[in-house]
Length: 347
Image 1 (cartoon, rainbow, N blue to C red):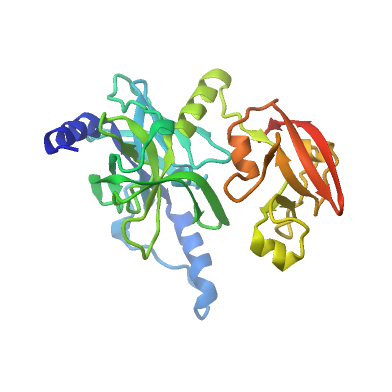
Image 2 (image 1 turned 90 degrees about the vertical axis):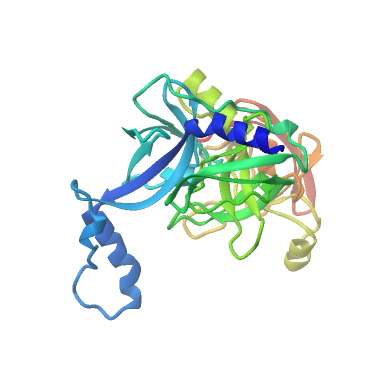
């Protein structure tokens, strides 16, 4: 990206990038802080004290920050779901020109790390949305965000280093590891606080939402493809909520290692398995439940295509909508059979 074009792109996009400040009531912070550190310290009988300089005039304590970007002049903002994951926190948006706004959370995607916010104003600058299906390896990109929660609207540059990456990430405290799939890999620096900011192409279009960095590694950052967020925006406009399809089973995708470890008959497919003491392998009332699927069944194919590490059940669902019919080939012990199910809406 030539220097003159790079600076022009930054000037074009920067006014539409926002900072999101996360605050909580003092009592809530002291309580959660006590719960976190008390198991490791001799009990003193006292709640940990937050320094006075960290408390504002309303008794609120800043506990984190993130980034976002305006995609509609009427105040619609995209960010990461994990940035606004704490339902007990308050979220305030600061625009590039220094204005402060209370925030309404319109939607959280039940699967992808996407959230949609709204601030009560209009005539705002916006970031145009590109097409993440047309991204090419090696193309130059910019990442913009609120780095470390301190450095407002930090810009870093790099290239697209990889496509369709999958990583395990912690979205928020007290939430288990989540697999994020289909990500854009870039060597543009993404830091804590950058989450939710845009990944920009040479045209000044958002092609991704900055989502994660691999700590301890250099030049390994990831962004969620913007087409996932575009789908959510369409759903919100059409239905007033995000509609995502659900099959209703928990599974582990099989590979050579899992086959050998568990003595399975095949080296591909999805092994239906309960993955925790408080969960069920088949969600009651779901399409999988109504189709009669059982724990330890192996779903071999979806619509005639094998299920593998590179093409999981979730990857198939990403291409489908609520109400779509899905043909599944299933292995139960030594018997193969097929079932046809209609996908329901994930709540």
